Image (cartoon, rainbow, N blue to C red; front, side):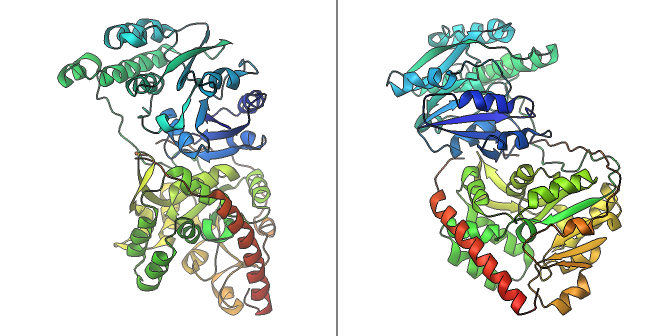
Length: 504
């Protein structure tokens, strides 16, 4: 079996054709699309081809490639770009054949192309001086490659144009057997001079950085080595322009049918620890900080695998689509990780996320968390503070915000929103009616469409930038899928019981 990883960013126009070409291989494969927080319909288009889609924790091709490798189930991994429509039908066979035959550990493609100025003017000359053993490779910057996961997991993925040359050098330094594969003619978009300038700078920086025989001081002078881009937190709603109406869903109580934190604790065998924290810790800030430790040492692939195993509220995707047609921006709020929330946001075609930041190093959780400023008031945790924050920062009247959550845990948000909707609340109906404007009792969000007024559509867009870095392990998705089935049964029984008790 082979894992095919396709990193993508705003490639909705081409991704389905690329997936269809990849599927023509004679090999048994899994396809993993790693979305780099696209702002177009890339995720929606990819999901039409019945492939696994994960959301990268940070914008940048290198991060996406590494996290795709972490998610891969098989030893042989092939990478292809998501914007090229001229791949041969046997692209995967060509890339992985030498590894399957035991002739190589890493395969670099070469192909006919319109131009290759950075390769000819920067990469090859530097390689001939610093790594003469690699100078013969025809296209050292090619991104269509294949390698053994056991070796790829030991190398560093640069998060810029240097990623492909960096992998070649690292694999060579690990002693991997490297060969080339001719994949025919490939056509891709010509880059601007500005892009070429950036590429040449980042490629040269990577090569120089990996040349250990050059003193560090010279490296900095020679190639502007340490031009490390400062990592930015996601400015989630930065480019919404004069947004007029919005629906915010509580991730754990209106999108997932089960609590993510509880499922993760089960998957990672930390259930007893979570129960202790929830029983003993009443301060919300301290509780969030302590529960973050449950994720320590777990990589992004494992964290998103848990999210993918939790059943979603039936029909939520269709409800989101209709709300957006009516001109609503749709987003998520959670006390948990923004990384998980963004993954679900992308899968459902939503627009934004309000969440806390789980710290990652090399895409592995450190066990630490940063609580978002908009959840704090005088040092205390205050989830409802997000509504005045939105109103002030993004010029949205709080009265134009619909909040969908749980009657027991979301009292302040249900009260503060323009329309507070309690979805299958856990409290007695008499109490919920005091804090919520509307109550939805069944396991469907379709009634929300009767609550959200129809109005003229309003165009809006979201800009999403970057985050952080360590190594990997594995969780058994089979057990989680079993849990998913059990979870749905449990949830249905719980709803029936609630109805019988007239608490919903």
